[in-house]
Image (cartoon, rainbow, N blue to C red; front, side):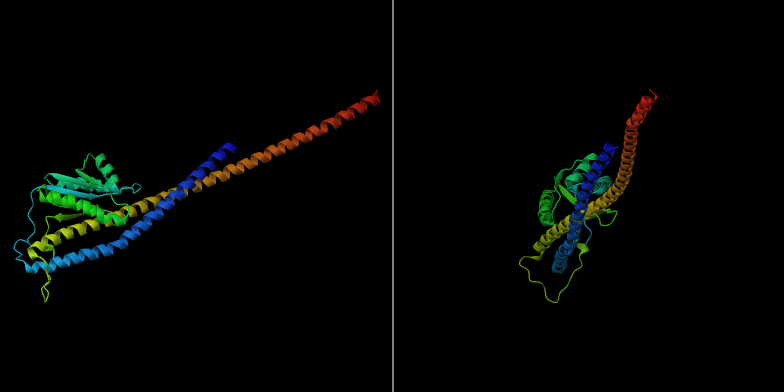
Length: 304
């Protein structure tokens, strides 16, 4: 019985250590998700500044052809998918891989699959999706701009040589389901930006025709930074939900193990009491036997 109780006690200690690890991961995921959501305000403010600059530049140009929705461009479809770099995020990467596979099937043109995140890469390979280009996902928000710079460099290379004709961005959304969000980044659609006519024309250091493409590139960079921050937040929120579920399972397991340990401890105490009572009874019987022997001996001498 002692061995069984020792086994349960050892398992209780192991599960308790696991609970500490899960609790730490849960707290870290919550902190990172909050930080990412707070950082979004500044990222979106920067994106809005670029949008305003585009809106103020458009009236300075002959916009023929700019405000029309872009025609389907030649070249491959660059499918840019943001996934997770680290594990314990539930079905986060599986949903993104499934969404990427569905998007690839919906386009009857060659694709350039670009995957961000080691775990997303594993999920894609499990579905026989081999990326043409991949990059680790950020594990700290301070690296979001560097990641966006690496992505933009690869995209602009493909756009410049005609290998890439359009860009579709996929990243996880917010909320319990975290349904993937798809955004078309290129060809660039200037009709999305309302013209902002000012009383005084803005002061430009370059021709408007040269400035507008530069602003479009900066807008693309800002959108990718925003996607990286959103994906980082969604990844940690998914990890938070996974760790919360794991914590509930651990609490239930600890409750069962503690109940089992109490039962075994009570059985052990009961058995010890029974053993002590048995030993005491045996000792009492042993102590009465010599007295009876002496009585018989005395009686025999008298009879003799």
